[in-house]
Amino acid sequence: MRITVMCGAGASSTFVAQRLRGAIATRGLDHTAHAAGLSSYPDCLDGTDVLLVGPHLADRMDDVRRDAAVRGVRVAMLPDDIFGDRDGERAFALAEAADGSTTTHDERTSS
Image (tube, rainbow, N blue to C red):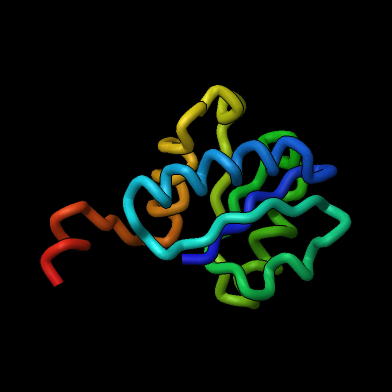
């Protein structure tokens, strides 16, 4: 899964993406997570499976969902308190839920 975390300038999304990469690494998955700011929108949708949108961009969600749907990108709004997610677990759970996947440790190791 290729995850993009988008915020206004890209600063707060960088922190979320970094923590999300830690949660991904802990699971041993080959997912990616990177940050993007509005200046890279809508190009940041290309090569993205799941877009996590910062809570301060709620007023843009209708447009984001429309543009993402055209590209087959799933979208989730990050909660207001996501910046307290120190280990990236909540952000990872949101990305998984948006993607429709729930990979457990047993599923990864039994192939």
